[in-house]
Length: 259
Image 1: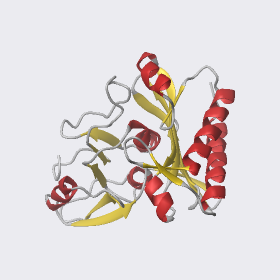
Image 2: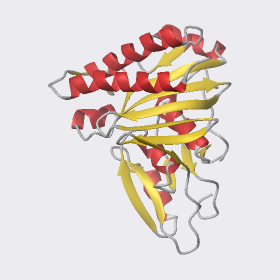
Image 3: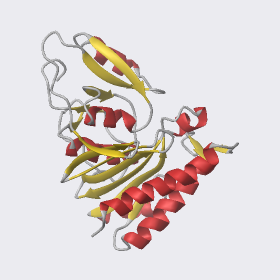
Image 4: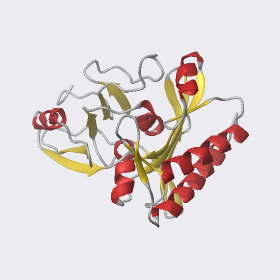
C-alpha cells in the first residue's frame, strides 16, 4: 500500500519547510479555539497533504488544518491518514525545539503506523507491526518500553512543558517516589516508547491528531495508551461530535502503583 521510508521522508520534507520559517520572523494568528497558528503549520500541512495524495491517493487525509468537509466525512472512513503538521505550536513559538511533525495511519480506530519527526532535534521515531525505531545522528536503532519499576524504584513520569494540570499533579502525588520530566508535543509519548520514561498521564485535553502517530510508536514498542479512568485502549474516530481525546495514560503496562 505504501513504503514506510516514503512517509518518513515526507515528514522530514515537511520538517524542512517548518525550519525555513522557524529560522526567521513569522506571523502568529489565532484559531477559533484560541490556539495559536503559524505560517509553519500551514506550510507543513500543504506539504504532507500534497505528498500523501501522490503516494496514497486512495487513502483520505484528516489534518489539524483540514476543512469542515473532512471533519464531517471522517466517520465513514475505515482507513485514513491522521496528521498534525506541527504538534507543539506553543513550543515552536517559544523556539525551544520541542515540536514535531506527526503522521499516523488509522485503521478501524487503531493507530497502526506512525512517524514522529522533531526537525530541530533531528530525531525521528516510527512504529508499525514490525516494531518501533528511533533515528538520531544518522543511526537507526530499535526501541522498546522499560520494565515496570519495582518496589522502591523511582517512577520517571513525563509531564507537559506547557500544560501540567491539577489532575496531573494529584496523580503524581499518589505514586511512590517520582522524577518528573517535562517535555513538549508528542515527544512525551515517545519518551515512554523508548524506555526513557515509565509513565505519561495526560489528564488534560488533547486532540486525536496530537497523539495518533506517537501512539503507534508506543504500541510498536510494546507499550499501551489507555483511556483514564477506564484503562481501556484509546481508539480514534469513534465519536462524531468531537475529535478530542479522553484523558489517557501512556505506560508499559498497568501497574498496581497507579491503576
